[in-house]
Image (cartoon, rainbow over all chains, first blue to last red; front, side, top):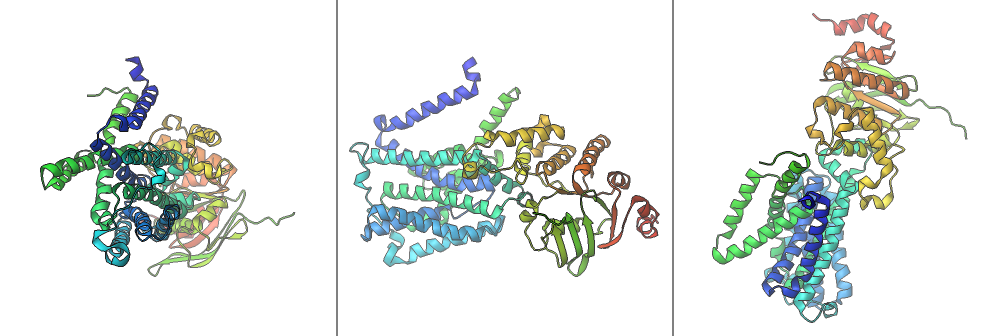
Length: 324
Length: 254
């Protein structure tokens, strides 16, 4: 039991086992499980892009799916209408989404709390209505279908699903490492400083507007990556992905897991939320009611999210306190 | 290159009104090395407003503020702080969800220990910056909070939070520190400790203190400014202030 008490070594061992498990999934898993894993990853990234702002800056942005959709739409339009090849449409999708986020970032930075929430909602609804109504370009509510995964990227064998899994896994991994590094650096600490007292940060000489803007951009980049993964896996994009429901799913997953733990909370929240959605929708039409009840229970009983339970357990061990 | 010595802080005819009420009315004051001051006055005299005007947290209506020869009247808060101005708050304004160490770490920004590692700051763990961490530990010892390094501010007592406020002012290593009622709500023991630290600081830095405890205030410096109804009533030595009829009048208990 001595080994179990060495938390650092236990963590390392756990991490290696998890990594090996994730890499070997395509070898033994069923098609269904592989699909679920890919879904967890791209929706997980969307939740992380929400949690990054919520956890580090205390800002609840309802426009996280905007960069997701803009990138996906740009690539889809370029491909469907044969405007340009992937090598160009991919950077273009990113660029348009980030330029839009940069402009929005300047605007929303001037607001706080409720007004921030409202402004991000308005901006996301604006893009949603463009996607819905500019039918010549976006094909309206049907969306754009039949987007093919680029053949050039089939480097992990012949099975398209396996290739998609590994690409999703690689990009998901890069984003997670990036967020992990950012949150434990002094940059992350500065963001948390703004969350706690922006006036004090300004008095200490920090350019808080620039810091907030940069965090907004990081969130947009993660959301864009998520959009690309979604587009190539599902082969379609529609305005639904930017509806209120889409923002709500990110919000629910984030709060279920706990906004304080950006990576763990987001992944856990997304896995629970998306699994419930899938399994319950096969049993009852009112699956949203069950998710809603679970959400309500978590908010009332453990407002800091499910990961806070692990945190409490860890703290109890560290302080040598008895766990009851 | 020779430079004409400019006074550290010059406040000239500064005014500020809120809804037509003059909170600060044509106040002029000068601070320099060896010329620290205590600001006293009844509640609502405009002391904190004057602090906010100096730091730039609220814009001034009229007048001019110069920091080391630079006109800062229209400069934002962070620019003034870069010139070497720091303050503490009447109601503790700390990062409640961060630890004691993190609060001090963030406060090193404008000090000589706060040198940024550029873009690397984004990705390297903050604990890897040994220079900053060592400096934080030094300050923790100085303010006697070394056992609290990993304690979140929200779990600390009021007195400990006041100690940290002081530590944050120390960490930014400013030339001028504005203390806004640093002794408010402290126990007698805490008063002795914090009072001692402020007295020590007054020897090294230029300070301006708002304090209701006149005896303590007078023990820090021999320059006292009295504010009343937003106007600077009198500025002088403790004896001059004690003997002033006008000052006695405003502090008189009916």
